[in-house]
Length: 216
Image 1 (cartoon, rainbow, N blue to C red):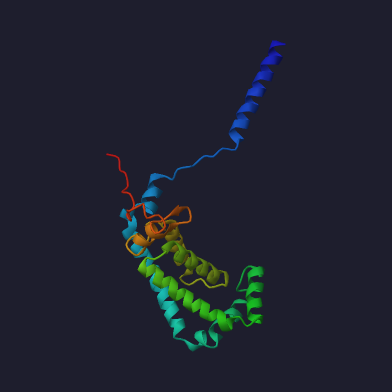
Image 2: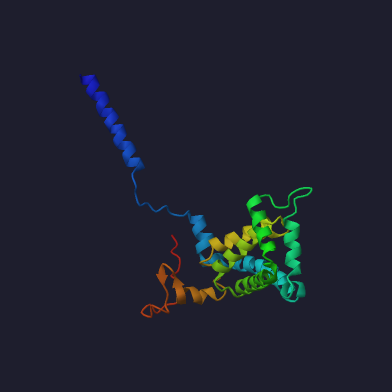
């Protein structure tokens, strides 16, 4: 009986340990110091300034060329030609995923290129302007990444893969990527969905973030 009871206690102990391990707990996993430094410290903002200006140059060049092209701004023939090339399946499909090819084909059948071409041109230009000014960098970078993803899904590589990687880094660094720009004032002024800014919380008189604490 003693050996039986000992095994029973051991089994109960293991079960209790497993229950504690898989129990639902509210645990916050801290970011490593290196990630905090590059994505959350204003010292690294100079790097993000260079990165966002580099990305912005591509969007501004591409957007401006479309804004001044009648095939983009009037007829949409340029976008129509791009979509027609994307849905080609002979001798080899340009678009890898069938569902995305069907999506583009639907837009073609609806003649959406007549108005969608203007959306593309204005979007590229606005993304470039926002990145140059450092205004809402996280939001601008998100839409830029979304456009890079769509271009690649449509079978166009070009500079999109590299732009997508750098843009994702800008999204991760949204708190400091626009520090040398308008975000230095816009973010504290307007706040975020989870923290009210100075505009709606005038009792908080400071517009500057707290300096990073460093260990001596």
